[in-house]
Length: 190
Image 1 (cartoon, helix red, strand yellow):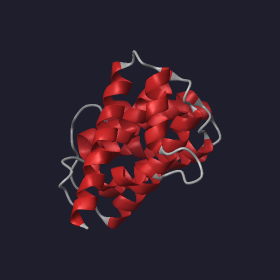
Image 2 (cartoon, rainbow, N blue to C red; image 1 turned 90 degrees about the vertical axis):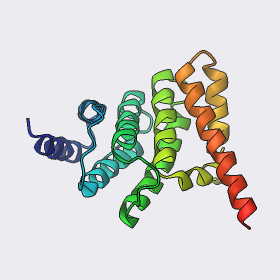
Image 3 (cartoon, one colour; image 1 turned 60 degrees about the vertical axis):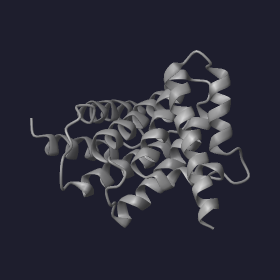
């Protein structure tokens, strides 16, 4: 199976049937599997942007659907981990902007699905993967939801709700640690 054709077909389905939670969830499960293989594809940044944009739209449109949130966040986590690292790799402005928008949607969805362990674990993994791929993203986490709770408090709330989830605890601690390291670096630079 040609991976690029499969990805194109999945993205077409996600866009065409944007109101179908089942299509969103299952297409993202397939994409998550494709990107869990650890095979980095070179020279396909536009494909990554297309996928992140589709995930971002789906998270915005289906942020109350725990299964869509979990599968969409799994795509982000797997893609960032296998394809967008190491973090010293130069990202295009388009990719950087898409990641900025994506992290905001992940945070919103995580807050709305705070009572679902699978959605919260996948969202925390997506946050950590995005921040690992683009470390400067972590600084925005302290204020990413103005007027509402910030990401750090959403993460700590989730840690309290699911104290036995090692995956959630690890991802949240890594994100919070990165936040303080990056924030401290910014303060030291000033």
